[in-house]
Length: 55
Image 1 (cartoon, one colour):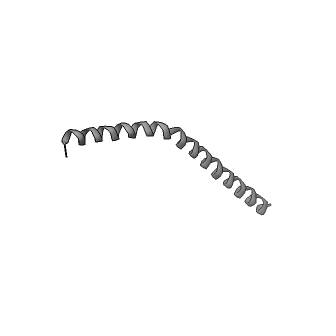
Image 2 (tube, rainbow, N blue to C red):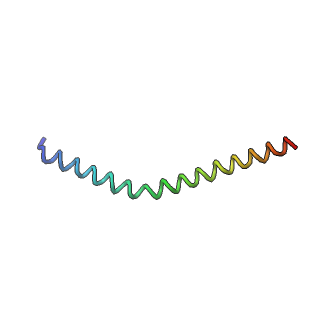
Image 3 (cartoon, rainbow, N blue to C red):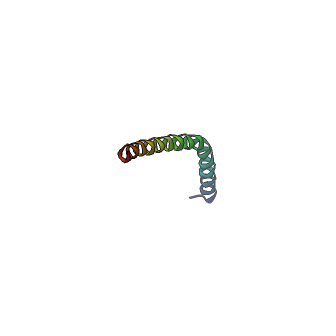
């Protein structure tokens, strides 16, 4: 294969990588926030149950 073509494909892949990372960064923050809220809610429910048992 032509070395110039391989170089251009690699450069294109790197550019695509950075473009996609810029797109998915907000999506990842959104999913992280949802996950954190879910874990906090589960822990809050468990703490309520433990408090009721200790009374």
